[in-house]
Figure 1 (cartoon, rainbow, N blue to C red):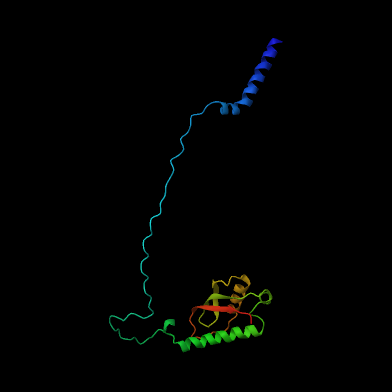
Figure 2: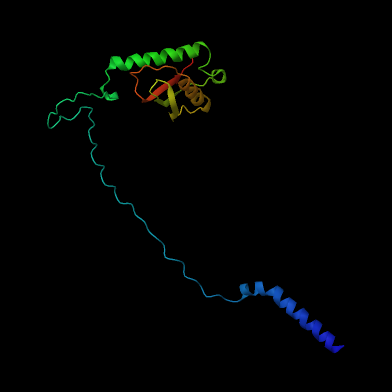
Length: 175
């Protein structure tokens, strides 16, 4: 029996040591750790901003005058304000017709009192049909953005003098 008692006593002692081991660290003195050195930061004055570059809309003077060729290519930048007004008026008329039919301003947006302006990039094909469009600047309301895209995509037969790629502001205002 003594052998059994000895084994039990050994097991009990070993169990007590294992259970007490985590708490022994608190009673044994630990060497003090030195805190890490403190970091110090200081702000330096920022460099002065470079002066703004003046923007000008004037075309630079050509160095040498080239002879005009027989074939001339028209660019969108050479449009006069009257030409630009023609196709813009056409677009406005088409959007106004959509509004009169109740297809322009969503009824849900009117009920919520939502207003805003959406900047839509409109790409036209050679036939004057809207080939693609996307929102460049949101109004902040998804319903108005979607309505603007739908209105621009519904445009038909935009005049030939219209640029093939243009930013079109679509405004939603309640009266």
